[in-house]
Length: 233
Image (cartoon, rainbow, N blue to C red; front, top):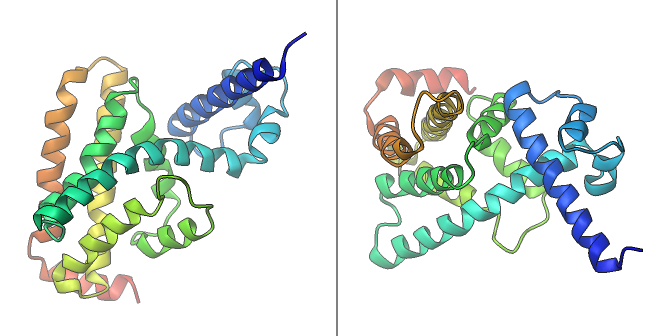
């Protein structure tokens, strides 16, 4: 007969397998992947396993996001603390690094990675300029040991320092930078999965995305300023 601790450990292993399967299948098959396919990929014969462990499809998707984001935000929070101490907390290049590099580190530690593609799918469900939608989504979540709002804080600090903080252009620029970075990292994941790029290329590639992402935030663009006013009325 299994003891209570053994059952708890088995339950945690099952939950982790479900999270791994959900992240991979949402990333590769899209947000409407059947729950039965996720349970089967996790090696579960019981189709109610997702309901048992996470309550619902949305509960499972939220849990995937929280699992990775907590780890990434722990590194981000440490970077922000150092930036605050050395006076670079409003430096846009440093803020882009705080967004990109911890994300890339999480990918590198979990190869083959599906994390960027999972985020790419999530962004496809959001408005073009999504920062306010993102904050509203965070508001419904239970706060974790590592604050889930760390990423939002990075976005809002960028927003304050882009285009002199003038809206709606500032918010649009930050949203476009995030989409550019996530799409770039998702493309790297696909190429790595099919053997077209080596894992060792990721650090330099991520740093290149930092440089280009910084350009998205800072390159003068009267046309984008005008478009923002028209797009986001």
